[in-house]
Image 1 (cartoon, helix red, strand yellow):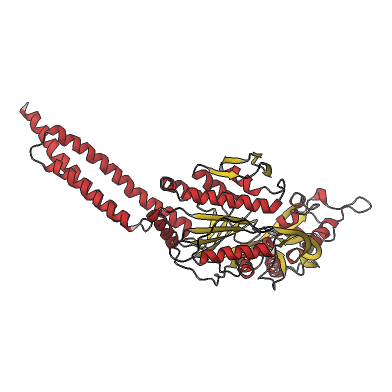
Image 2: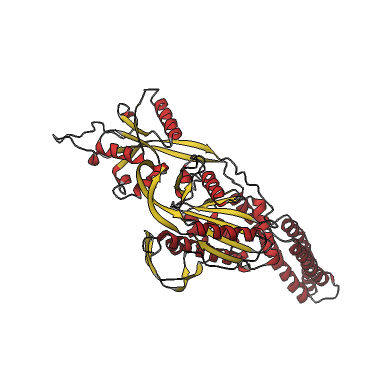
Length: 520
């Protein structure tokens, strides 16, 4: 019996002390990891230090107090083991979160990519001669099969990319000498292909959505095959707008959305969502200005010739052309950009458990294949795919693209409100997993840390105003689509532009703003 008591005493006394020493080591290790994570405010480090000192001091007194019963020592040892497990998991989790953040925000794009395809008509769509024979005698599946054919190119737009693609194709065929036929614009080129006046259409893939927006050409992708593809790297020229201290100085972010799925977010190409976010971190004032994609603005990368805003993304370096066009027109500096796609929005919203928004009016959506239905007026809850359908719909809305812009701003407002809630700290891993690979931005990891630290420090509520610019619908020439035909555009309303410029100026000046109503 005495021997059993000695074993119990030894176990209770010395093993519990060993566990306590492990606890102290893990506490020190966790504190060091925590203090190297710039996301958290400095005060949190002080609170953590005091908490760890207090807990270990209490546990140390229990372990080393000479006359405590074995039951108390064993109980304290169990508590120490539980604390060790918690500290061990936390010591693993924080570096894991940091790695996720670095993965998401350290890949600042320095180049984009243009995809130039060589399109041929499928055999069943090739035109026939009067005798019933196929007008285009060439048929095949590779570039080699079409080397003796006629290659349709455009003589006024996207010349550099087409020339590069033809150069690569000729080299692929050992400088065979492919025959080119110049056309006035993309629609003339497509018509020539359809009519059998050319065998291969050489065209940037970014033009496909533009072509299929037009009635009569909406089945283009169904009629053609791709026999060859050339990828051209595009260097991204940094914006002249200087970066700022995002915790003390006002700044502007350009939020761009592409109509694509997947994790391949290209900064080059059309953007269907164009939103200026003006932010003052000291006064907690934010405005979202949604600009219709069809807005007819001077293109900064094409001699200031007016064109649809969405077309600016297919010039130069893509996002930089859109950014420069908006900067020039609104007279502002855009400090940062974020490019998202369909997958970005769906994944982020699902990761935070959906969004609660106030829908101003009832409407039905058929904008995406994955979800069709009716949104009732009033407070509604949106899943990721429902939110995408909500911000994509325009054809069933009385105010068309303006209404779509309003819905985009509503979702953005709700998203920011939810992401700034303290409870979101528990979902940070899900959020980081969701956004990884589904967006491009020039916001650095340090700036993200600084913003997160500021928000965690003051837990402030932000005052957000939303404006969706309108326009006057008309038909005009679009240089990106050629000067043969006129296409639908939206002429900006000057009084609305003046109004939102004033809002952005007030935010920059530190004034408190209130939601107003755009002039008609």
